Amino acid sequence: AAPSFEEYLKSRGGAPAAAAPAAAAPAAAAPAAPAAPAAAAPAAPAAVPAAVAAAPGAFQYGIYDDQMWDHDSKKVVYGQWDPTAPRTPLNFNPFETFLGNSPDASGIYPGEQRYKDPKRGDVSYAIMMAEKADLEAMKASPKAGDVPGAPGCKN
Picture (cartoon, rainbow, N blue to C red):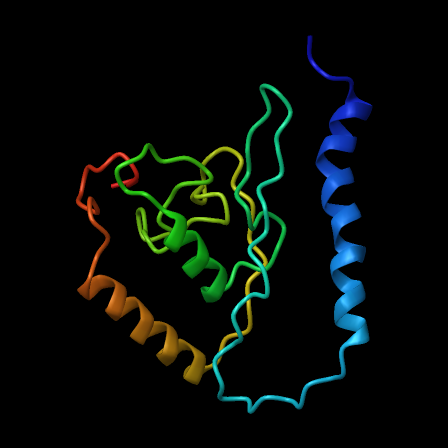
């Protein structure tokens, strides 16, 4: 039997909200770090979020769903991506484009069912140049199995 609407809301909203205050407490106790220069690339995420378990029969969103979807987050998802395994919201190449579009934090493209506009990070020319260098390095040494038509690829 399908869960009640109340159970569904608890499964969607209860787990992430409970984890947020616990994660914020250590950061509040730490002394403030000096401000980084504006041209510096963004810092890596402190911890990789865990995938929230979906209710039986519910759609499983990606680990960065409703969180900042910036270059560092995409690099974490890319690091976990297995091109030889079937493409899922937890296994996709975040840098792969489809019809000129980039995927959201669950590997879904604009116009597809369940697409969610991601929370995007800050952008500057210096940040874009650092990201471009990362992408060129990834393209120069692709993952084993990253070929057109692979199960983990959209194209």
